[in-house]
Length: 383
Image 1 (cartoon, rainbow, N blue to C red):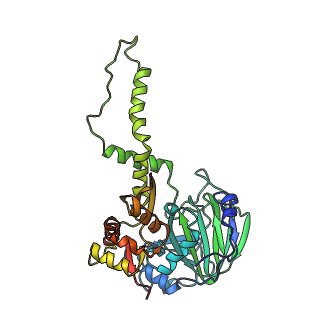
Image 2: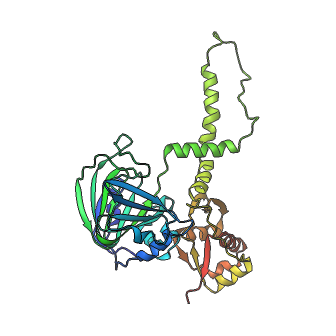
């Protein structure tokens, strides 16, 4: 899938994280990538995060998956919505939906949530703390957007849903298949299915909070510190009042903390590994049989296509003089020369044909073998 009528530069300049935008069917040819029955099947599986949201008697009800197969037939005529997280990890056709949005850096992409709703179904007026592209896949949905929200915005009391207590719509559209609504973080919005068989694909993006970064990076730093690295003041002199924490002591103490936190190289290496961790690390995608470097060489010489696992996350940080640190699923790999070029190619596209000239580069073949054996990439013939 790709866009044929969408100005990316204009969007980033005028709309990204600024204001909502309705994008009327920008695709070359829109095809709904997943059938409702397939989505319902995923919601019944262990290890797949799903929710069933129903409305009745003026109340919102939420049921968490895995759901029994006969659950949907028992929902009756009341409006309901099924939401399944990270469907791109389980359906290649849905994973392909992410590609047109790669003008946003890969590390910011979270997952594709898919919802199915009956007539009148929705999850109520709410706001998210991340950017989202709401792609209408099947049927129709009426979207309303309101003003900006924050931590002080009143919410309804509900254990599972963060519903706005007072939603005031400022704009409204009905989306047809292929239409997209972009909603920035903090903007109130409400979607309601118009008719049955309404499917929406939510391409969501991650935005780490300051508290998350500080907490996780500090924990990482502390884990590598030696207990005997302690405060010292060999130039101590008598001070007027022993109760004072002197300026020189405060400077030294703050430097002990600041020097550790301000190491840009250490932060980049930590963040690359941290942000590339899989959304569901407990899922094991490793192959039944590991591959040897010689087998990788043979496949590369045959120009067999290398595919990234949609459940894996790839990123790299430039390390100077053409070198990079590659991050895949929380692991880091230092790459230079031809290996660095290959690492950047793998990060840039969901699939590549590796230059057969690299088959003789042991380090490059060893990297591919490692990624294959970890379940992060796979080979698939084009035939």
